[in-house]
Image 1: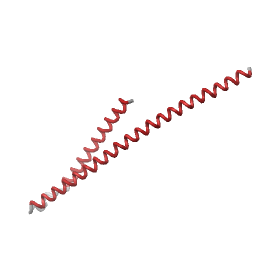
Image 2: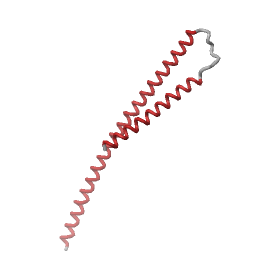
Image 3: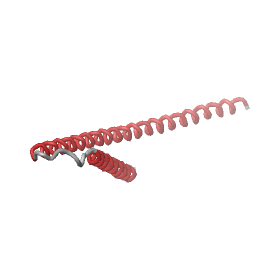
Length: 116
């Protein structure tokens, strides 16, 4: 079961990394499409300010994406833990039901033997 759990962790990590990269590329592409080639280039300071602002926004987006991925990963791990607990509970209940059936059929057989 550890091997399956490890492969699920690896697969989940790969899927989340793929989603992260797609989101980063999407934000990067949307930022580039907003650039206006006829932008006023009269002052170098203004360009640097805009560039810094965009860079800060991109870093903020990355941080938000990383935070969301971390949250998703923790939620998935919690769900896996709950699934395992539920599976153990269900197996325990099934074992108990089977035991009770055996006991009840045992009692019926004993009663049937007394009548003969």
